[in-house]
Amino acid sequence: MQTVNRIDPLRTAVAALRRDGPVALVPTMGALHEGHLTLVREAKARAAHVVASIFVNPLQFGANEDLGAYPRRLAEDSALLAAEGTALLWAPDADAMYPAGFATNVSVNGVSEGLCGAARPGHFDGVATVVCKLFNQVQPDIALFGEKDWQQLAVIRRMARDLDLTLPHADAIIGVPTVREADGLALSSRNAYLTPAERAAAAALPAAMRSAICRIGDGEPVAAALAGLMQALLAAGFTAVDYAELRDADTLALLAERGNGPARLLVAARIGKARLIDNMAA
Ligand code: PAF
Image (cartoon, rainbow, N blue to C red; front, side, top):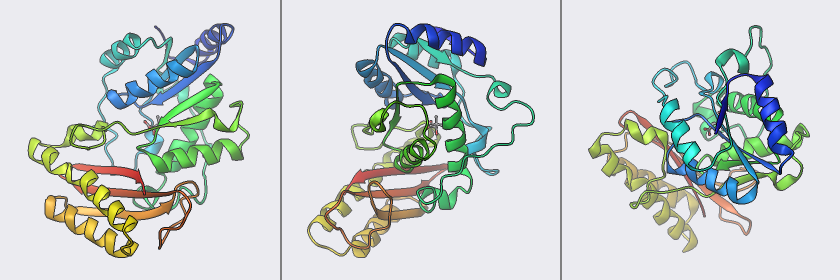
């Protein structure tokens, strides 16, 4: 696996790969876990070459968030990516991504609002800006993202459509289902912040979500099922529920009732030092 840190060698390396077949991009912020490696495996199954990026993007962290504490493990991550057959690692230096004087912001209205966008102002602008740059830098044939960050996926799809980004077709942005621990907890780099007791209690999140989805499916009003979900989380040791909402799976429009179209239950809740997010088809 080749590693590059600057734009010019990136372009040369990607051009060489592309001569030999389609290129898939897996953007990450590092601290790789099985969820990321699943993205790489899926990318390999769909394209001749996998380019992974590792960049802890300061633009998507708020002033009081964990940018400084975010785990950085480039050597371990490189070894994991190489073992999965990644062809190229794009690990830009900070000034290669944001040169002095950088002044552009990509902001996606609508889908960025509410849910995580409410608690993390500017977060999705930061995501959209860096992913727009990654698409332009690598110019992949396809790009893969985890469905765990469902709102992020919706923002990226909207941005790519709106800006006519160079991905070749509408389905080129691929969402890969969330990878879960045996007790149902979604894999996340932020699970590392949990103490053993908090980690055990965190399994209440997917359990309460599954239960609410069953209750909604059985005809319970959405508001009552969501209130039950929040109570269950607080009883299990979560300290706050930032949101628990039923939304249209594509537009993210809020749903007061379960209609006939695809719906998604999305939750963010705090336990210990971690803010956990999850979503499921509902
Ligand atoms: O999901 C992530 O790891 C990040 O938000 C992404 C898409 C790599 C952009 O920094």
